Image (tube, rainbow, N blue to C red; front, side):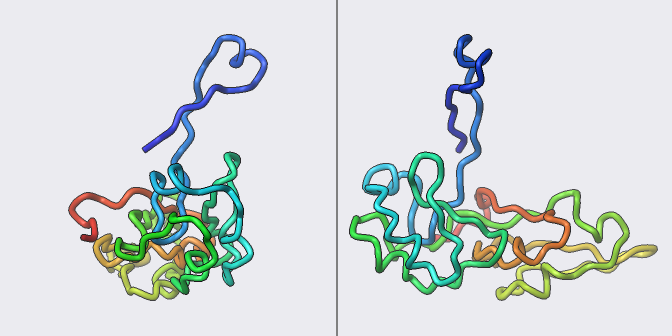
Length: 169
């Protein structure tokens, strides 16, 4: 789900134009609705994360940055939070990885970094004639940890909403 905010650039602010902002990836066992309802912005989850992937976004709410590491599902963020933001009875993440057009293999360069990094083996490689094997993501096996995002040298992998047919119960 995308949010819309007023663009505060001079011209767009005066005309009231809105800019669409993509939904940020939130810490495990939390949802945008629980963060909006209960998060006080205390940032206790930020230093608690041993992977250092949690930071506060522009609105002062916790968001994940998978560019350097992945989520290990240790639960330290949930343990540190004094508010009822985290619910361990739901799936850790409601997102999955997606492989974009900038993937090296799609451009003829041999690379299997994402598959090597995936702890769930959700990324497999389909051989093809005349070029390197192409990655295929099984969204139903993807835990959303972000290991492949951090490992991709082309920055071709991003996390997004999990396809409805692959949603976890």
